[in-house]
Image (cartoon, rainbow, N blue to C red; front, side):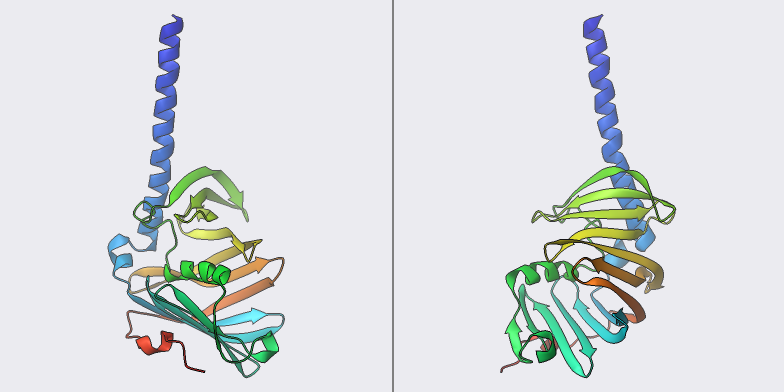
Amino acid sequence: MKTNKLIWTMAAALVSAASYAQTVDEIVDKHVAALGGLDKIKAVNTVVTDRSLAVQGMEIPNKTTLVVGKSVRNESTVMGNTMVQVVDEGKGWMIRPTMMGGTGEPEDMPADQLKQQLSSLDPFGGLVGYKEKENKVELVGKETVDKKDVYHLKLTTKDGQVIDEYVDAATYLVSKVKVSMNGQDGEIELSDYKEVNGVKFPNTMEISNAQMGTMSFITNKISVNTPVDPAIFKKPAK
Protein backbone atom coordinates (compact mmCIF):
# COMPACT_ATOMS: atom_id res chain seq x y z
CA MET A 1 0.00 0.00 0.00
CA LYS A 2 2.83 2.38 0.85
CA THR A 3 4.41 1.68 -2.54
CA ASN A 4 1.14 2.41 -4.36
CA LYS A 5 0.68 5.62 -2.39
CA LEU A 6 4.22 6.72 -3.28
CA ILE A 7 3.61 5.99 -6.98
CA TRP A 8 0.37 8.01 -6.98
CA THR A 9 2.06 10.87 -5.14
CA MET A 10 4.89 10.96 -7.68
CA ALA A 11 2.42 10.75 -10.58
CA ALA A 12 0.37 13.62 -9.16
CA ALA A 13 3.52 15.70 -8.75
CA LEU A 14 4.54 15.05 -12.36
CA VAL A 15 1.07 15.98 -13.64
CA SER A 16 1.13 19.14 -11.51
CA ALA A 17 4.57 20.10 -12.86
CA ALA A 18 3.46 19.50 -16.45
CA SER A 19 0.35 21.62 -15.94
CA TYR A 20 2.46 24.40 -14.41
CA ALA A 21 4.82 24.46 -17.42
CA GLN A 22 1.89 24.35 -19.81
CA THR A 23 0.25 27.27 -18.01
CA VAL A 24 3.36 29.41 -18.51
CA ASP A 25 3.44 28.66 -22.22
CA GLU A 26 -0.31 29.23 -22.50
CA ILE A 27 0.02 32.69 -20.95
CA VAL A 28 2.97 33.59 -23.17
CA ASP A 29 1.18 32.30 -26.29
CA LYS A 30 -1.88 34.42 -25.48
CA HIS A 31 0.39 37.39 -24.83
CA VAL A 32 2.00 36.99 -28.27
CA ALA A 33 -1.44 36.66 -29.87
CA ALA A 34 -2.66 39.79 -28.07
CA LEU A 35 0.27 41.78 -29.48
CA GLY A 36 -0.68 40.73 -33.00
CA GLY A 37 0.80 37.28 -33.48
CA LEU A 38 4.33 36.06 -34.08
CA ASP A 39 4.26 36.51 -37.87
CA LYS A 40 3.35 40.20 -37.65
CA ILE A 41 5.80 40.77 -34.80
CA LYS A 42 8.64 39.23 -36.80
CA ALA A 43 7.70 41.40 -39.78
CA VAL A 44 8.57 44.55 -37.80
CA ASN A 45 12.04 45.70 -38.90
CA THR A 46 12.11 49.36 -37.84
CA VAL A 47 10.15 51.39 -35.30
CA VAL A 48 10.29 55.19 -35.04
CA THR A 49 8.56 56.61 -31.96
CA ASP A 50 7.90 60.28 -31.18
CA ARG A 51 7.05 60.91 -27.53
CA SER A 52 6.71 63.63 -24.94
CA LEU A 53 8.51 63.05 -21.65
CA ALA A 54 7.08 64.69 -18.54
CA VAL A 55 9.56 64.96 -15.66
CA GLN A 56 9.90 67.45 -12.80
CA GLY A 57 7.36 69.80 -14.35
CA MET A 58 9.09 69.88 -17.74
CA GLU A 59 7.83 68.45 -21.04
CA ILE A 60 10.70 67.07 -23.11
CA PRO A 61 10.40 65.95 -26.76
CA ASN A 62 11.85 62.48 -27.29
CA LYS A 63 12.46 60.45 -30.45
CA THR A 64 13.55 56.81 -30.61
CA THR A 65 14.68 55.27 -33.90
CA LEU A 66 15.06 51.50 -33.77
CA VAL A 67 16.34 48.90 -36.20
CA VAL A 68 15.13 45.76 -34.45
CA GLY A 69 17.93 43.67 -32.96
CA LYS A 70 20.65 45.91 -34.38
CA SER A 71 20.62 49.65 -33.62
CA VAL A 72 18.74 52.22 -31.58
CA ARG A 73 19.06 56.01 -31.28
CA ASN A 74 17.33 57.86 -28.46
CA GLU A 75 17.30 61.66 -28.71
CA SER A 76 15.82 64.24 -26.33
CA THR A 77 15.91 68.04 -26.25
CA VAL A 78 16.13 69.69 -22.82
CA MET A 79 16.06 73.51 -22.59
CA GLY A 80 17.59 73.78 -26.06
CA ASN A 81 20.24 71.12 -25.33
CA THR A 82 20.25 67.80 -27.17
CA MET A 83 20.96 64.53 -25.38
CA VAL A 84 21.71 61.47 -27.54
CA GLN A 85 22.15 57.79 -26.66
CA VAL A 86 23.02 55.28 -29.39
CA VAL A 87 23.62 51.54 -29.50
CA ASP A 88 24.89 50.13 -32.79
CA GLU A 89 26.23 46.65 -33.48
CA GLY A 90 26.83 45.97 -29.78
CA LYS A 91 28.66 49.25 -29.08
CA GLY A 92 27.33 52.41 -27.48
CA TRP A 93 28.01 56.13 -27.52
CA MET A 94 26.25 59.23 -26.25
CA ILE A 95 26.22 63.01 -26.12
CA ARG A 96 25.49 64.66 -22.77
CA PRO A 97 25.03 68.42 -22.52
CA THR A 98 27.28 70.28 -20.05
CA MET A 99 24.19 71.06 -17.95
CA MET A 100 23.89 67.28 -17.38
CA GLY A 101 27.51 66.74 -16.45
CA GLY A 102 28.73 65.97 -19.95
CA THR A 103 30.97 67.74 -22.42
CA GLY A 104 28.50 68.17 -25.27
CA GLU A 105 30.80 65.97 -27.37
CA PRO A 106 30.36 62.31 -28.42
CA GLU A 107 31.68 59.89 -25.79
CA ASP A 108 31.65 56.11 -25.29
CA MET A 109 28.76 54.75 -23.27
CA PRO A 110 29.76 53.13 -19.93
CA ALA A 111 29.58 49.33 -19.96
CA ASP A 112 26.79 49.06 -17.34
CA GLN A 113 24.64 51.59 -19.22
CA LEU A 114 25.32 49.82 -22.52
CA LYS A 115 24.16 46.52 -21.03
CA GLN A 116 20.84 48.10 -20.05
CA GLN A 117 20.42 49.83 -23.40
CA LEU A 118 20.93 46.58 -25.32
CA SER A 119 17.52 45.39 -24.11
CA SER A 120 15.87 48.25 -26.03
CA LEU A 121 16.87 46.56 -29.29
CA ASP A 122 13.94 44.19 -28.68
CA PRO A 123 10.73 46.28 -28.69
CA PHE A 124 8.47 43.38 -27.69
CA GLY A 125 10.34 42.15 -24.62
CA GLY A 126 11.82 38.87 -23.47
CA LEU A 127 8.54 36.93 -23.26
CA VAL A 128 8.06 36.86 -27.04
CA GLY A 129 10.02 33.89 -28.37
CA TYR A 130 11.59 33.38 -24.94
CA LYS A 131 12.81 29.84 -25.68
CA GLU A 132 14.47 30.93 -28.91
CA LYS A 133 16.17 33.75 -26.97
CA GLU A 134 17.29 31.24 -24.29
CA ASN A 135 15.35 33.08 -21.60
CA LYS A 136 13.61 31.30 -18.73
CA VAL A 137 10.06 32.10 -17.59
CA GLU A 138 8.44 31.03 -14.32
CA LEU A 139 4.87 31.61 -13.19
CA VAL A 140 5.01 33.20 -9.74
CA GLY A 141 1.23 33.25 -9.47
CA LYS A 142 -1.96 35.15 -10.17
CA GLU A 143 -2.12 38.46 -8.31
CA THR A 144 -4.11 41.69 -8.14
CA VAL A 145 -2.33 44.87 -9.24
CA ASP A 146 -4.20 48.19 -9.35
CA LYS A 147 -7.49 46.28 -8.84
CA LYS A 148 -6.86 44.10 -11.91
CA ASP A 149 -6.01 40.40 -12.06
CA VAL A 150 -2.55 39.77 -13.51
CA TYR A 151 -0.22 36.85 -14.09
CA HIS A 152 3.11 37.48 -12.40
CA LEU A 153 5.87 36.00 -14.54
CA LYS A 154 9.53 35.91 -13.55
CA LEU A 155 11.74 36.27 -16.62
CA THR A 156 15.43 35.42 -16.41
CA THR A 157 17.34 36.50 -19.51
CA LYS A 158 20.20 34.61 -21.10
CA ASP A 159 22.71 36.96 -19.45
CA GLY A 160 21.16 36.53 -15.99
CA GLN A 161 19.00 39.66 -15.69
CA VAL A 162 15.82 39.04 -13.69
CA ILE A 163 12.65 40.89 -14.75
CA ASP A 164 9.21 40.64 -13.16
CA GLU A 165 6.51 40.87 -15.83
CA TYR A 166 2.85 41.40 -14.97
CA VAL A 167 0.48 40.23 -17.73
CA ASP A 168 -3.13 41.47 -17.57
CA ALA A 169 -5.36 38.41 -17.14
CA ALA A 170 -8.07 39.93 -19.35
CA THR A 171 -6.06 41.40 -22.24
CA TYR A 172 -2.83 39.35 -21.93
CA LEU A 173 -0.84 42.53 -22.49
CA VAL A 174 1.98 43.50 -20.11
CA SER A 175 0.75 46.15 -17.66
CA LYS A 176 3.81 46.44 -15.41
CA VAL A 177 7.48 45.50 -15.38
CA LYS A 178 9.85 45.51 -12.40
CA VAL A 179 13.56 45.58 -13.23
CA SER A 180 16.88 46.85 -11.89
CA MET A 181 17.72 50.37 -13.14
CA ASN A 182 21.27 51.54 -12.51
CA GLY A 183 21.50 49.14 -9.58
CA GLN A 184 18.18 50.21 -8.05
CA ASP A 185 14.75 48.61 -8.28
CA GLY A 186 12.48 50.33 -10.77
CA GLU A 187 9.00 49.96 -12.22
CA ILE A 188 7.58 50.56 -15.68
CA GLU A 189 3.81 50.82 -16.08
CA LEU A 190 2.47 50.27 -19.59
CA SER A 191 -0.98 51.23 -20.85
CA ASP A 192 -3.06 52.63 -23.73
CA TYR A 193 -2.03 49.98 -26.26
CA LYS A 194 -2.74 50.92 -29.87
CA GLU A 195 -2.30 48.98 -33.08
CA VAL A 196 0.18 49.96 -35.79
CA ASN A 197 0.58 47.69 -38.82
CA GLY A 198 -1.30 44.96 -37.01
CA VAL A 199 0.91 45.06 -33.90
CA LYS A 200 0.05 46.64 -30.54
CA PHE A 201 2.38 49.09 -28.80
CA PRO A 202 1.89 50.79 -25.41
CA ASN A 203 1.32 54.51 -25.89
CA THR A 204 1.79 55.49 -22.25
CA MET A 205 4.74 54.51 -20.04
CA GLU A 206 5.46 55.60 -16.49
CA ILE A 207 8.98 54.82 -15.31
CA SER A 208 9.89 55.24 -11.66
CA ASN A 209 12.72 54.45 -9.27
CA ALA A 210 14.21 56.02 -6.16
CA GLN A 211 17.02 57.77 -8.04
CA MET A 212 15.09 59.26 -10.97
CA GLY A 213 11.66 59.71 -9.44
CA THR A 214 8.81 59.29 -11.93
CA MET A 215 8.92 59.97 -15.67
CA SER A 216 5.85 59.79 -17.91
CA PHE A 217 6.20 59.04 -21.62
CA ILE A 218 3.22 59.87 -23.84
CA THR A 219 3.44 58.62 -27.43
CA ASN A 220 2.51 61.06 -30.17
CA LYS A 221 3.28 58.86 -33.18
CA ILE A 222 4.67 55.41 -34.02
CA SER A 223 5.87 54.51 -37.51
CA VAL A 224 6.68 50.90 -38.42
CA ASN A 225 8.98 49.74 -41.24
CA THR A 226 9.85 53.21 -42.48
CA PRO A 227 13.33 53.53 -44.08
CA VAL A 228 16.07 54.48 -41.58
CA ASP A 229 19.41 56.00 -42.59
CA PRO A 230 22.15 53.87 -40.92
CA ALA A 231 24.36 56.97 -40.71
CA ILE A 232 22.37 58.26 -37.71
CA PHE A 233 23.84 55.46 -35.56
CA LYS A 234 27.49 56.23 -36.36
CA LYS A 235 29.53 58.09 -33.75
CA PRO A 236 30.49 61.55 -35.05
CA ALA A 237 34.13 62.55 -35.06
CA LYS A 238 35.04 65.13 -32.41
